[in-house]
Length: 517
Image (cartoon, rainbow, N blue to C red; front, side, top):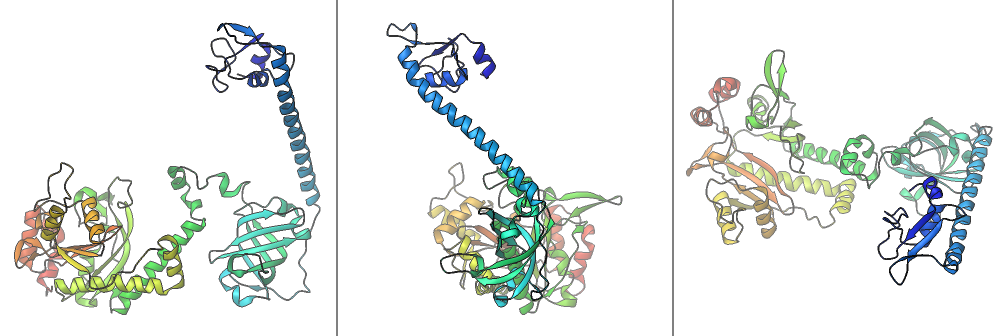
């Protein structure tokens, strides 16, 4: 109820048991709970007549003594509010005056000082005690009085505390500086004094600075923060990426891709860049992104493996790190419509060779990450309990997994057991993997569950030479198979899957012009 209505009311009702200071309006039908709230709603004297419930459960006028008692509290509150309004007004007036005064403060670069060396934050340790200059974004801004100001500078290579004193923090630019503004700072790098903490163990004692690009009042915090709903965070992803957590993840992602490249190149693979606009499906038409390609139907690639195979005769073992797309409208951590797909193809190998190479890949990449300072720091930060995998991995056939699920009481939702030919979903796989508590190479899936390019096992034509790598706490991280390398088997697979091999002439040609396993 607003103040105008309160003033017009001649009577206000208070009921300590059934009234509410939140939803009540002071009427007889919707009484307030406390006399103090009734006075607040009245806003000023003279008060209306206050009624409360008497001993006979009838409305009676509140006693004068009770009104006097509560009125003292109301007066104190009112004075505090008035004092606050006055103080806020004085503070605002003082702030505006300081801003006007700051427009007359001018700082100039001192040309008598040594020439500043342009560096990045990552270079600071080797330039301590030197005069340097850096450019970057204001990650944090903290002011202490009129003559001291701390800015945490971010330049993509790290964070640096910059200390501004005196006139440097009294300019108009300094008083209005917001987070995410871009600046150039000049000064001398000093080790952090004992008892103080700063990123890198040093700080920049600034002697001059310039504002490059302004940011709106409040910076990024005006748009979102850590408490924002996930949809807001995703809509503002371009700004979220400036935060410490996501930027650390992006740096780690870059390092992961680098280590995969290093592994493959050290093993003699050649990196290639297959097309992502294609006219053939690989993993099934239900997850294809279709589009019109100058009058012809085309797709965003689901996988580059078929194209990689075309390069085996000329380049030998090849790999790619490319984008793949799946038209799956889901919101889980395991289903992305676009993702970075690491794929490799090798000629003249057996199924056991393939599994050995996968073990080597995963162990080597983890070892390389842990040997890198950034990799080790990031892994320890996000997953301090992480233990790198060690060879050999446990190898388990699909049929053995069915037996394990049955023996350990892991069933379908209808409480029945998984039978041969059933696709084992993520959750039962994870339960099994977590229980075994070591990496598993789950091998030899039924042909009915696999793609046209997967070959049958020699000892059991109902199964294929295929695998998934499962790890505790995560589930599946790698999937793969051998390739149906004999022309007849490949054509039979096309027929069984109801696919027209004419669209794959370029792929089937690989089986005609010198095929290999």
